[in-house]
Image 1: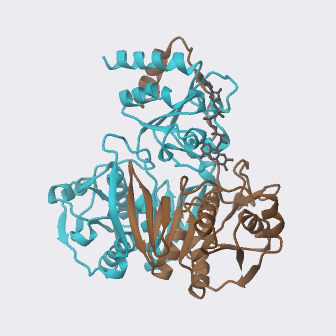
Image 2 (image 1 turned 135 degrees about the horizontal axis):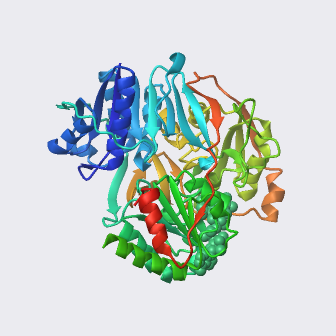
Image 3 (image 1 turned 180 degrees about the horizontal axis):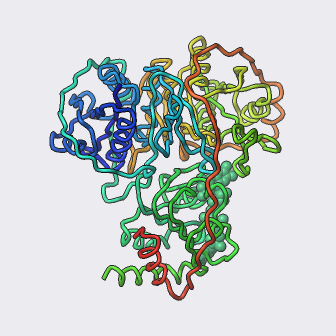
Length: 323
Length: 245
Ligand SMILES: Cc1cc2nc3c(=O)[nH]c(=O)nc-3n(C[C@H](O)[C@H](O)[C@H](O)COP(=O)(O)OP(=O)(O)OC[C@H]3O[C@@H](n4cnc5c(N)ncnc54)[C@H](O)[C@@H]3O)c2cc1C
C-alpha cells in the first residue's frame, strides 16, 4: 500500500495548494499506515523538492525531462500512472486545480480507478468502505461518494484542508518513464501569467464587486482594498459579461467556485447563481446599499451603505489598522 | 468537419436543492431541467465553427427518455442531429465510456463538452473521453479557433492563460468566454421537432463510484451589521473575532 501525490510546479516552484495536497495525502497515508510518495514533473530544483518533506513526503520521484517542461495532460497522466504502478499506490491525490481537473480523470481511466474531484474532507474508511465528501450542486450541497475500485483517485479542492507540517526525511529519486510522442500532440505555444496578481482559485482573501459599482472606471478602490489586504479580486457575472472585468474573475455557478477564508462582496445582490460559487467561503462580508439584498442572508458581517462612501472609509480604516 | 457536443441534463440554476429517501436521492419533483449552462457554451461555439456549411454538429446525451426535452432544446439552439444513449448516468466514468464508444464508431473531428456540470460539479467527462479515445483533451478552455485541421486554444490556468495548438482529433471542455450562449429562435424551435434523434443502447462497464448520501451545508448564523459610518469596526471584527485578517 502506498499513497502517491502529484505536485504541480509553476516555473519550478510549488504553490501553497501543493503543500496542502501533500498534507492531505500524508493524513491518508497515516490512516492506512502507508508511505507517501510525491511525483514532480518538469524541472524543479533539489531544494524545492526537499520542501515536500516538511509536509510528510518520504520519497519524491523527480521527472526532469525537457519534453515535459510544459503541462500536457495526456503525457503527464501517463507518467503519473506509471509512477503509481511502480509505487504500487492504491490512493492517488492531486489538487483540484485547473491542471488537476484535466489530469485526474485521465489518470483514473488509465488505472481503472474511481475518482472523486472537488473533495473537501479526508476519506472516511469505516467498515471497509472508502467514502469521500465533495461539493455538489455548486456549493448548495455536498455528496458523499463511495469509491469501490481497487485504486482511488482524489482531487482536493483548494483551501479545503489547509497545510500541516509533518517533517519527514525525504529521498529524491530520478524517474524517467518513456514518453510516447502521441501523448505530446497538444503543444503549449505560450504561457501568459499575470505575475503581480494573486490567483483567484487559491486566494485566501477575495474582494469582489458587482453591478452596483456602475462601471469599470470605479474599480480603482476595489483594487486598492484588495491590494491592502493581499487579496485577489473577483466579480459577478454581469460585470464580466459587460467586459468591465476579465472573464477569469467571474465567480459563481457558471464562473469559478471559490472557498476563501474571507469573501468581501461589494455592490453584489447575492443572486442564487452567484452564491452558488461563493457560499462555502469561511467568512462573508457584504456591503450593499439595499438592506433587503439577498446576500445579507448568508453574510457573517454586513454594512448597509453606499459603496462609494463606505469603501474609501474602509480603505482609510485598514491603512490605520496596518499602521 | 464533424463536431460532437456532449450535453448534460441538469436542474435549472435557480432550483432549491432538496433530497429524498433519507438524503440518498436528489428530489426531482417540481424541478425544471435545462441544458447544462457550460454545455450550451460548447454547443454555441460548435455551431459557430460550422456556420456557412463548414460542418455538422451532433449533440449526445447519456440519459433516459426523460432527458429528451433537453436534447430538443439543444436541437432548437442549432445542432443538426442528436444521439441519446439510453441509460441513467451512474457517474462520469460510465458517461464518458458510453460517449467514447459512440465516438469510436462515428468519425468526429472535434468533441466539445462544458467545463463541468452544475449538478455534480465534476469536470471529469471530457478528459475521461480523451483517455478512452487516446486523443488530447484540453480542459477549461476560453477560446477555440479551428482552421480545418489545426486548433488554436486558450486554456485557463491559475492567474493566467496558456495558448495551445493541436492538430488532429481532440476533445475540449468549454468555459465562459468560449462563446456567447445562443438563444433558440422560432425557426429553431419548429425544426427541432423533426431533426433526427437516434437512441443507442448503453454498454456495460464496471461501476467504480456511487453516491452514498447528500448533505446540505449548515445554515449560517445571522449577519452582524456594522454602521456605515464606522468601517473601522468591521476591520476590528475581522481581525479580533473572525481572525481572517
Ligand atoms: C444560467 C445562469 C447562470 C448564472 N451564473 C452566474 C454566476 O456564475 N455568477 C454570478 O455572479 N451571476 C450569475 N448569474 C447571474 C445572476 O443571476 C445575477 O444576475 C448576478 O449575480 C447579479 O449580479 P450583481 O449582483 O453584480 O448585479 P445586480 O443584480 O444588478 O445587483 C447589484 C447590487 O448592487 C447594489 N448596489 C447598487 N448600487 C450600489 C452602491 N452604490 N453601493 C452599494 N451597493 C449598491 C444593489 O442594491 C444590488 O443589490 C447567472 C444567471 C443565469 C441565468
